[in-house]
View (cartoon, rainbow, N blue to C red):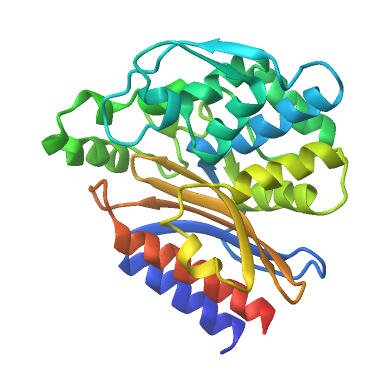
Length: 299
């Protein structure tokens, strides 16, 4: 199938699933890439935990932080569906810095992430990205904002109302009255910006080898695997990724390493116009679109 037909079919599939998306797939060795609106900026939700982990690990590698340092973390006491790890704890816990990195990145734990942000604030994470030469990812706030939306304030049987607000209040330029969904106020980025970061983590770059290796390890241990994983993980491939989810946003970025040596970075950033929290069909379409783009480059 020609590239034009592949892209046309992908756009049609996304539209039928109620999705607007920004996708980019890149062969990390040849540089060949294929995408759908890869430069559109989105609020990135929990994808910010990848640059947070990288900035923290760079500081550890420079000796500014000690990975074994015990950190006392207040309980998150989350009661709504979604938050994991320390975010659901009811009592204070003491956790080593390196283990906070695991909880934040591999389990997407907001409380663990904010403990890391206490050590390396958003402005410092953004500065670290710039120092390393990565543009296009804005880090503006901690992750506590991700569990402070209308969805947490409404009863479960009215969750659709929170999604309706997220969908109908957005402007054409990705502005929004909810700061977490406004690209000028939220942590934000594009599919291209995240593929550039993945390239730097998987191939030689300004990132130090030890931090890059640890981020790769943390992403390989990602436990949230219902979105793109079914289409990229197999006995003959290794899939390492991070998801981001907030109201009508569903994202995932990752790298698939095939047994024959080919390696592809994948970024899929989407927003839904369907007012529902659970949309497994939409996630399946995301995965199929991303895989088809990869297939076009691979074969």
